[in-house]
Image 1 (cartoon, rainbow, N blue to C red):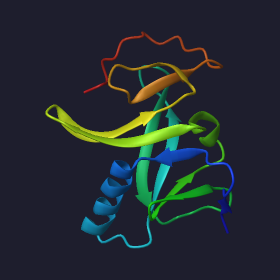
Image 2: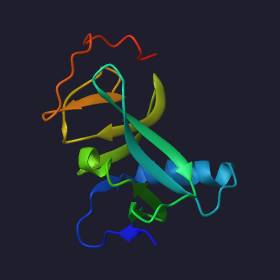
Image 3: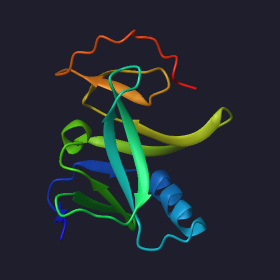
Image 4: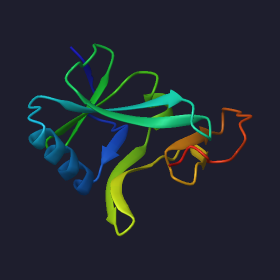
Length: 131
């Protein structure tokens, strides 16, 4: 059984993000899957965001539901994603998920990596891995 937050929401999805996740799940025929949000070390700012569709919910995961989409976050990543909002943006430059994270004090120009106030990072500060 996973931990389910009911009173205090730790992360949120916009309606556009929930629609995009639902569409991905339907197109890939992945009924019963959740959107996993996580952070990993690396990226040009220190940490990078990750997302995956999966059905392996661990007992220690936090689980949230937004407009019919289950979102899970592991107990380490929630410390970096607490209060974050996931949106799906479409523009002439492309479309994709965008994470607004109140814990990030600096981020990469492409928005896929970040640094928190509690973490020092001695990387180059450049963003050569942004594609």
